[in-house]
Length: 76
Image (cartoon, rainbow, N blue to C red; front, side):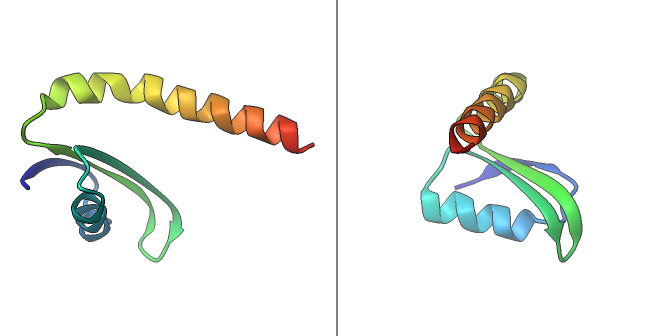
């Protein structure tokens, strides 16, 4: 599978591994405190329109953040 890749390139190898093993159309990898520092990488399958996917990322991240907040509140 060929994919458009975005990000700083620090974690492209790991990104490729996840894309392949999960057979995903889109992968967004966020690394904090990694051996190459903090970073992110994103891959979008070539069959998708990259611009459309990128436009959806902020709302997806907000939904993830909201879910984390709710889970944290429930744990207290």
